[in-house]
Image (cartoon, rainbow, N blue to C red; front, side, top):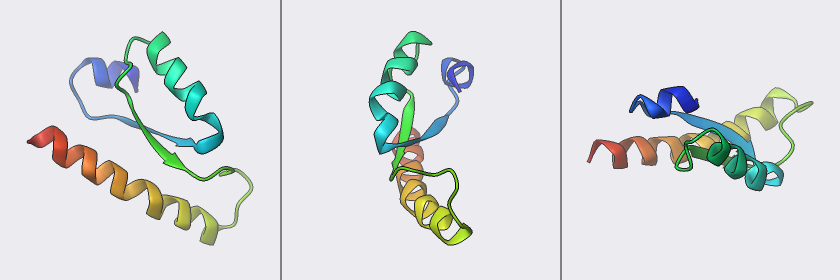
Length: 72
């Protein structure tokens, strides 16, 4: 994602709330402090499809908003 962002493309990482601080720190380490982190509820692993879809339904509007803002 860092390389895509550095090339000017819109890139995002899905990150659970438990790991947001780590995600932010890693984005800085990789030179993309403005990397879009799509915040979802922890955990994601081990969930049934219904719960995964719930998480996706939280992340998708964040992504759409970011894309619209980038296009403006």
